[in-house]
Image (spheres, rainbow, N blue to C red):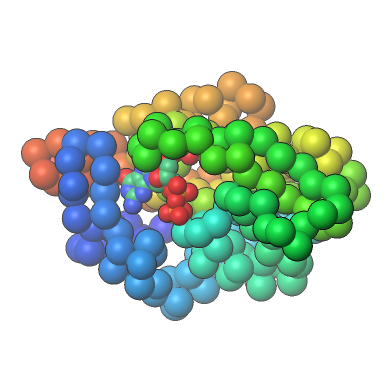
Length: 193
Ligand code: G4P
């Protein structure tokens, strides 16, 4: 997706060889027009899959996911990283370990909002090691829901996330694939420079 690739190249800040900061349009300040376009693209890719719900994880997945949900005209459901005091009924729960942040979160979704009648499209901002997406897929499995695919905005293709998701039999669609962050420079997959 050219608009997102341009943003990543122009506004992305390389922190080190593994981390790209995109606070200007995704992780802090959000480019709403870009999120809208992202909704259009994922809709065109998955419109024949019978999607009933967009599933993401707080916090940064919510902005793109809500635009995708709007385009599909289905709810956007986000997994929470802490159990709210108000959630006393049943819920699905799984651990998600972040290698980037060196932290494990127990993430939950209420069973009120996910069931075996659902087909979910999982949306997230970054794909690094695949932990978040695999955790969301496990939540869908607990509910008996079908995962139609994983839609990612920025995939770090030098990390093992895609391979792990594909090994799990999941379809992965990434709008921007970063091949390398070496030399303080963003190199996209397919770029010769
Ligand atoms: P994984 O889910 O693919 O395994 O990724 P990992 O655990 O390594 O990443 C954990 C968190 O860090 C995720 O956010 C992910 O979106 C984010 N992240 C990973 N790599 C990068 C990167 O290069 N740049 C930026 N900006 N973020 C990255 P999170 O913990 O869910 O936090 P939130 O930001 O959504 O609140």
